Image (cartoon, rainbow, N blue to C red; front, side, top):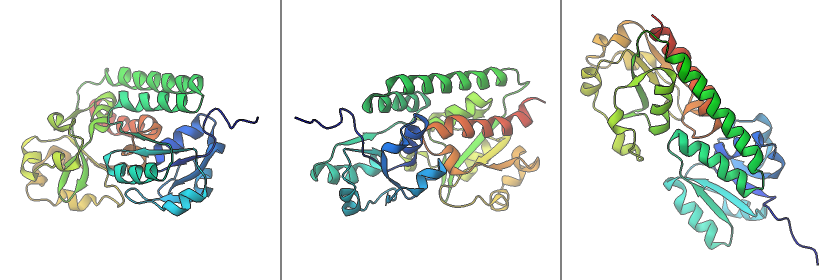
Length: 265
């Protein structure tokens, strides 16, 4: 009797970070379907696109005959439930912190029988973050950072972003909101941003370009140290708002580069 593969061999990824992780583990050939927002690695964009973030093409997924479907967060809970009702194996990750991102990598490695590679990848990412933290510890000052995840309403950074800001050498101005998983619970008032006087503003508006002049022209913001010094920066959402390897590499690198321009003085 011939048995099937002992680990999943046909995997659909409904968000980008699991696709990127599988390729970094050397298992990109197992990926048979991806999110329409996938950008990394470039070759993954050649795979069939089967989903956006809050909707999916169920018939197209079924046609791919996946033996594992990977989803993310409460926003994909309904998609995951429908796929489960259709008889598929679905794993929904919900990582929101740096530690949980690293845990996701290790868990995914276990799911596909590549625990050794996943452990090596997670350990390297941990070591690289520790190196950046060590470099940042030499800064003469830790600038106050306002990270803006959305502009209307104003939404401050989610947990892994705020943690990466700290690793990169800055102090988030809304530390009390970082554990709020829902964006609506991280809404902040413009007047409160002014009151907390950020030295640097870093924005990443998912799905649209940041308009720095729009930020600078908000009522009262002309008095902010960040605005007076021209320290309004953008990091593309693909590098910082996806809870996967990109945020722990390119995302934190860009944060460190921005913050070091203030912290080393």
